[in-house]
Length: 313
Ligand code: BYC
Image (cartoon, rainbow, N blue to C red; front, top):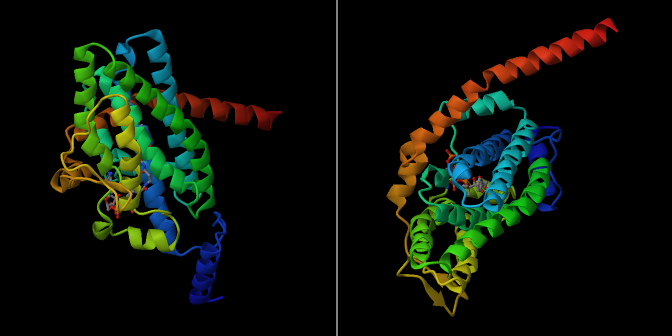
């Protein structure tokens, strides 16, 4: 069958909501698109452990520490599912990780901001995981089978993450005036970076066209951002916090909130590696990877020993 015919059949499958599986024929651009998106997603989960790891040893109670630790471990698990899904596209985990180590690969801009207070653990869970869920719920229906199935499990865990963050911020918002101030300050610092997680406006998003045609994306950047804002404003009101956007206003006609413009210079600078913590995040990842060399060597030596024992037997 020639490529034009294969392409036509591929699109028919996509339009009929039939999942594409690793051994199915797929256009090279579809494969590359997914390799890029799934690996960036995996890197985000792994780098995303750092801002929260910063507070593990300073959590204010044993319960808070245990819950935060469980959440961070979940993020590691998400990264591993996603690398496995990305590997089914014919590129090895080592290659993906090399791209992360050298700074060639992108990961979500949000993780290049510092977590300065305990209230930031609330803001990260509530807003960052909240934004991640809105995106990932739609990705459960993405056209590539391994990615869609990975998302189902990830979404279940993310909703626990969102609730743990909301609990922290809600407790602080009803605490002492200083605690309420910390909660508001965390919201002020994390609001705009969180809504930037959805990426550029659709009109400035070069990947959206193909992503929608191939049903990799089931909703566009702007649609998902709007859905997140509409959900979150009410949650802020419930706990007496104010979204730091003077242009935020309910639009009766659209049945949605109107909101202010993001600082796109800041967004692109962070995406290109100029975020407040970009260098620190990459260095920490590389240091951890290098420090783990002895574990990888030991595991390899053990596997070789087991293999040679089996051969002898
Ligand atoms: N940050 O054409 P566009 C989590 C890049 S982590 C950095 O719209 P696309 C969690 C984009 O990659 C949640 N870069 O791209 C973990 C593209 O560059 P390239 C992570 C961004 O792919 C721990 C260029 O800008 N979630 O759950 O159609 C703790 C043009 O953009 C960003 C995912 O990764 C950004 N914010 O749409 C807590 C979900 N935005 O690659 C939580 C999966 C854009 O062409 N990914 N760029 O050089 C997606 O849904 C899509 O990839 C995006 C971007 C919506 C992020």
